[in-house]
Each structure stands twice: as structure tokens, then as C-alpha cells.
Image (cartoon, rainbow, N blue to C red; front, top):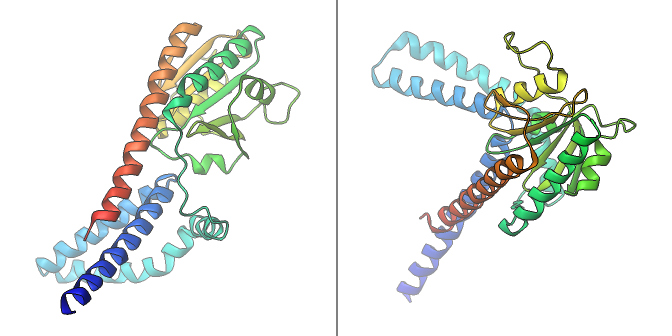
Length: 273
């Protein structure tokens, strides 16, 4: 009887830890999709400094940090207010525990639809800006556009960038194999060395690549030239074949990484004791 009670209590403890671990995991995923992660890193640095100052008995530094911590208690809810509101909204809609994960099976279809759309937009000299989200979340820029969350198709992408449409001037953001948002406003690069012939779309593509690891495709409205941008570097005059190859590598790699991260997180949350 005693052994059964102990085993039951151990099981309850394991479930308790698994639930808390999973909640923290989902919170970290949500924070990762915003720029708030940088603020959290700053808070972590302050905590480390506070621990070291207490360990070394640096009384003046400890006093200053104590005052600053009191201020943080008031400031942090204000700083993270938008994120907290969205988290509560997602919880109310039952989406907090959900995890979107694109299947590797859709990669060829996804690459084909995007490549065909880019080829057609280039032929008609229709300006376009496609941003494929990778590990750095782009929620701050998604919020500036219109939420779509639709399956990607060549026809949908072409219609979005139709000059007569209301969303053609903004960027379309792709996340987890879906067209997540359109008409999004991106930061412009501050690099003054780039060619004066490059327009706002190219400057926005460079800008978002400088603050994230996104893979960006740009179609020039003036010439129809296709360019890709990564990590602040632009490659221009891409044909269909090299574009398809780059898309396949980036999309397949990102989906594999997302799947591994999700499975690892769930495995840790279920096995941690």
C-alpha cells in the first residue's frame, strides 16, 4: 500500500512538472516571436549582476540594483503589455497550447507555388516583397499588416501584389508554410552605401534581413528583376532554377529545425522530473 501511494505521488509530481515545463515552453515560443526576447536578455543580465554583487558583498551595487528591481516590477507589465494581452487572447481562443508545424511533405508544393508566382510577377513587372520567417519571430511586423493565415498558392500571391489591390505596397510574411499576413510594414535599411537605383522594397528587404534571419524575395516593379536577401546581403538577377534551389534549401531546413525544436521541447517537458 505504501509503495502504491509513493508511486502515485511520484506520478503526480511528474505530471505537475510536465505541465509547468510545457507552459514555460509555450511562453518562450511566444516571446521568441517578438522583439521582447531582447528585453528578457537584459533582465537576465541584471539578475546575474545582482547575484554576483550579493556574492561579493558589493553593498553599493546591490543597493542600486535593489532599487532598480523595484522599478522593474512596475515597468515590466507596462513594457510587455501588448504581449500579455495577446497571450490572454490566445488562451481564450484555445490557441495557446496549439503549435503550428508545417509538414515536410508540402515543401515541393510550397516551393513550386512561390517560384511560379515570382516568375509570373517578374514577367509582368509587378513589384512584390515576400518574407519567409525563420527562427527570428516577426510578430511585431505581422501586426502592422492584415492577418490572412491561408494556404499558399500562386494565384493568391499574384492577387496580393496586384497594383489595384490595397495590400500590394506592403510585404507578405510566410510562416510555417502558410501565408500568415500581408500588407506588412518593414524597417528600411540605414545602410547608405547601397545603390540609389534600389527602391523602397529593396531597402525594406535589406532592413528586415538586418534585424532578423528571414529569407526575403523581392521583385522589382521597374525591371522585373528577382532578388533574394539574407543577413543584409542581396543577390540579384535570379532565374527560376536557382531561386527554386534556394527556396527548397531554406524552407526544408527551417521546417526540419522547427520540428526538432518542438519535439525536443515536448520530450523534455514530459521526461523532466
